[in-house]
Image 1 (cartoon, rainbow, N blue to C red):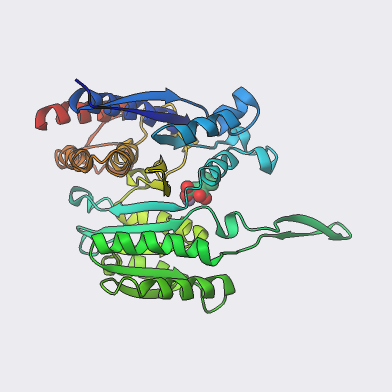
Image 2: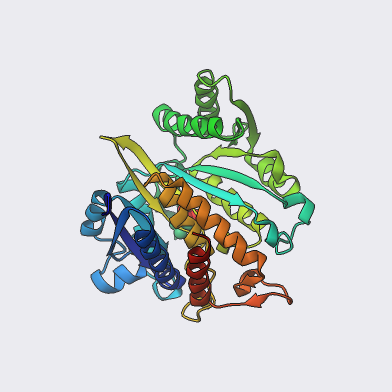
Length: 368
Ligand code: IPM
Ligand code: MN
């Protein structure tokens, strides 16, 4: 007898998003067969796929569904086909809209180095070995959403493009609380990244972070300017445990952190909303994009997607054991030398997207 029924909305999106989503379905079905939870997968469209079908990058119906289900799993959005579209209906707008509408302000982007991959990074093995850091990115405010924004005519055909970087006390406070709570459960170390030497919005950011820190005396707080943080991430990433930062800085630093792990194809993410009526809206997605250049060739790396499913099991369904099992199983596969092309050396056995998916399932069967 199954004890719990859950609904997962799957939004494969574009490019490799579709291929890696199919592998995620295999994994979720395996979890249904092997736990007392039943995961029902509902499908929807986002990005270019939704533009082709409905003329907009996400429909209101999809957003309503996303708010109803227990978790959303997203592949990736975007592609050349839609690059010339008006800004408001580009595929990326679909992603930004669903994050905003679901109020997913807390974006967890872990960068974990599997030691079997220390040689896949462009950095020296000793710099990244056993690295396990977490970037917590504010996701629903800052320069991505600030008003006013736009492109306006000034004179003689000259224009002005402008955006607004703004944060309110409440917006900073809620991400700060998540950051301190997370740091408390990990090593107790938190680094807040800002540009408080130049930008007022991040002067307020720093003030609110410091104020919140008073309630968490057990967490050791430090501050860093974003330019220095980018440099330190490459110089000595193991000095960090949890980094909390703004929407834009988090976007940039998380791509940077992904290369510490060898490939952008390895990084999962979780985006969470506030706890309301005992429920937290949540969306899980790999950090990488839709990689149109390799789409449809069965060579995309599905690992970031598997790890995103793992985060979903832990954060939304209270199955941290399953998250650990997925991570260990991936580590086993990598230790045996099986890789997709993006992380392979000459001596490795290169497999396709589907084959890595099949191997994950057979390895799960073996260790369960
Ligand atoms: C990410 C992506 C998105 C972002 C784009 C696709 C809108 O780069 O999730 O990091 O900038 O947030
Ligand atoms: Mn990004």
